[in-house]
Amino acid sequence: MSVTPVSGPPSLFPRPSSPGSCLTSHFLLLTLCSVLAASAVAAPPGGLAQGWQEYSPRERYDALQNYRRHETLPAERQQDIERNYQRWREMPEQERSRIRQNYERYRQLAPDQRQRLKRRYQEQKSGSGEQ
Image (tube, rainbow, N blue to C red; front, side, top):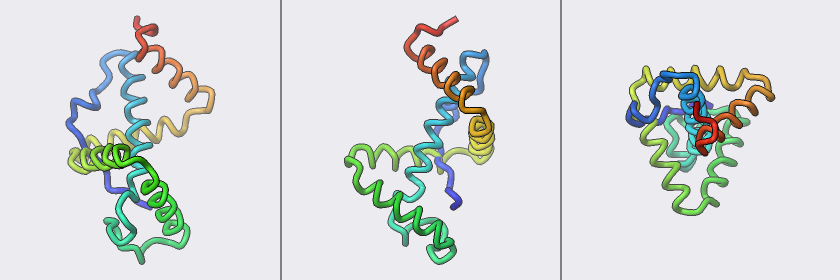
């Protein structure tokens, strides 16, 4: 199922200037993509960007499951997802493309590399991984 990208100010996704900042960018990308996946079907099936009939049966099933899961979230979390999705939609296509490419690179990492990246991000976030 294709997802219309969410946008936000480019400053939210700065280009890495050092190896440490690369971790932050990758984690932001991972977080954004997770939000996108959850928010892709935040609207009822009839409200999706693509016509409901254009989806395969599997895509319809997945979309409906995501929508139901979205509906069970607390209202504040639903609003967060919808705000993030709106920011993605407003983001310039070039920035969305860069984020998608980074996410694809992340997905291609071996599980241990992903874990290392997450761990380094958490260390950096907590201040213990600063160099």
